Amino acid sequence: MFVRKKIDYYPITVILLVFGIDLMVLLFSPSLLITITWAICSLYIKGFICCWNHHHQHCNFFTISWANRLLELIMGLHTGIVGEAWVLHHTLGHHINYLDQSKDESAWKTTSGKLMSHMEYTLKVSSMGYLIAFKVGKRHPKSRNQLIQNILLTVLVLGLFSWINWIGTIIIFIIPMIVLLFFTTYDTYHHHAGLDLEDPYKATYNITNHWYNFFTCNLGYHTAHHLQCGRHWSELPQLHEEIKEKIPSHLYREPGFPFSLMMKIEHKFSGGSPKKERMNAQVKKHCNDE
Image (cartoon, rainbow, N blue to C red; front, side):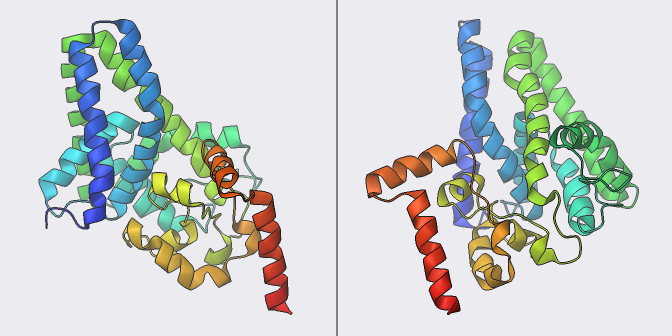
């Protein structure tokens, strides 16, 4: 098979479609307004591609190496995070050290042991991300060399695009890459900040909302992901079902906008309400405990 699982065609198709529109706008847009409008409208979609880029680095979508490298190049142009940066900073760094704040590449504690503010964490991790990836790369020279190749190829492609249309390249690619690097880090703060550092079942927040997990490819099942980070993203709900009794109830969160709005619309047309469902769930839990 060309892809690891058929369901991977979902993120792959969206990634290629967005990139195709990027190129069409870059090459043929008759108006700067159209270019800016597309760049703004596509920003949220590229935010989801950040999640898919993350999943791909844990379990590649394709079974063929060159196809994975090509997709990584495109996702890097979308998100500002090239493929091997995920591998070094996140997979070979954070996943190994997330229970030790003195080593965690995405540490949410200061050197004095205090909880960082959301903004301090975002600025520190996003600005130091590539430097930390190179630092981790000292232990993994093959991966570090791949990171250098990723960066050089990305810069080369951006240079080519700039030669064709420098204003369009800045608007469609460079600005979104910077913005999404920042906001990807901003979003990860809520995965672990302030939680237990000994028990992996208490070290991560989870979001089980189906809309959130549809658009992020099950990123909400984060405890399951950390326990078995090599599992394909489509298998995380099943793993979560196997371990959910070990996860404290306060480590389940509701998603933010636009998923909160989707939930309200869904419950409005289905005749239910989030508040009522939570009350029913609490009553059911109490009865089971009795």
